[in-house]
Length: 113
Image (tube, rainbow, N blue to C red; front, side):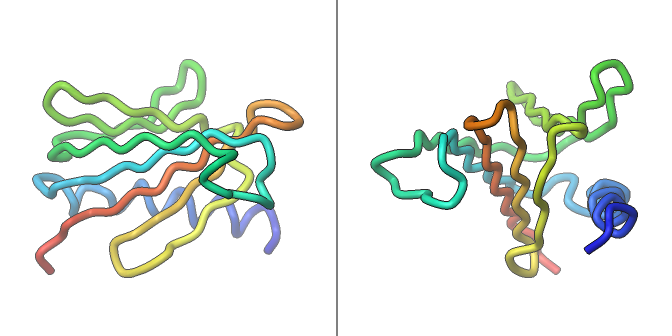
């Protein structure tokens, strides 16, 4: 996939995220040092759940943000190296923070439609 198509898929995701406002949102976040080996013994995982109330793009720092009550989550736009839709309401972002440090963010919306 070329860079323009890749960027357009990410933009499409965020342009349409407002349909998920009010939905229970699960974010599973993993930190790893080997993107090709996501073995649970070598990856640190966190799970957050909240109702999505707002999203935006923060120009300062190039961040995509999602917000719920007492919850704020950001994805660094310039560090995204992979994005895919895993299912009907499931998405995955992979950010690269150094040569060997990656953050995997899996987002699942409990959407009624």
